[in-house]
Amino acid sequence: MKIEQAQETCKRITEKVSSFFVTDNEVLLNKILAGFLGGGHILFEDNPGLGKTLLVKIFARVTGCIWTRIQFTPDLMPADIVGTRIWKGETSTFELEKGPLFTNFLLADEINRAMPKTQSALLEAMEERQITIEGETHFLEAPFTVMATQNPIEMEGTYPLPEAQMDRFLIKLSMGYVETLDQEAEILRRRIQWKKDDPTENVSAEITQAELVTLQQVAENIYVDENILKYICRIVRSTRENEKIRIGSSPRGGLALLKLSRALAMINGRDFVTPDDIKTVVIDALDHRVIIDVEYALEGLEAAEVLTDIVDSIEVPKDFTVKPNHA
Image (tube, rainbow, N blue to C red):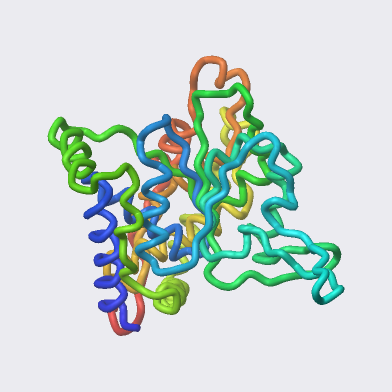
């Protein structure tokens, strides 16, 4: 697939999503798509009622892949999500009853409501793309993406995600409220048109599973100049040297910036990465990977503010090359 074809396919995906989900935030939709194309997992953290679950379900349907949903609750056990072996009397054998993790897109709704033991069962699948049940390893079919939602304002009955699991998410996003009165009214108009709260049954696939894998492969081949790579590294290393940050980003943060910037470049019709691609996703890729020093956290300082200062303080590379046929 050529870069022009990839760009057109990405545009069709976001336009199809916009036809069901009310937003004029094209950057947000592109970031979500970049998370898919980067082969990573996405965490949505926002106030309740903003359509996080609906948006995730629409994206899953539009991409034409198998998807499942888990409503995380405090009594959810690891076997409930990975599966277990069940005795079958007719064959006199134990057969594997696969859990909802055997899918392409997993919607992990209110993931922070599950106990840590269950949350940890996700780690192997998220990182290794495999599941081990009773000593037997089962590989997950590509693509595999976890799209998780959590409510940041209601803490009762929740279990904060451990740092190791937060680090597995390629990108953390927040949708926010719609900006205009007309957009607010459009939500109601579409509800009247659908005659039901959940329109996902009406969403048809815009691409196939094979095409999504192809798009991921195209993104994987986007060119990144050496000076761009060093720009990413300077940003990541600066999070470890900043006095306001107690724990900086791991190298996985640099990998996240690399994957997301490549995917964004492809979405924008380029086969090379620019500094603007990186700056667009710095906060989304690193915010959940750094921990602010308690002294500054008590003063209300947030990671996004520190990351913004870090990016502003680092010189943007002006001397970088693209592929020879674009030079």
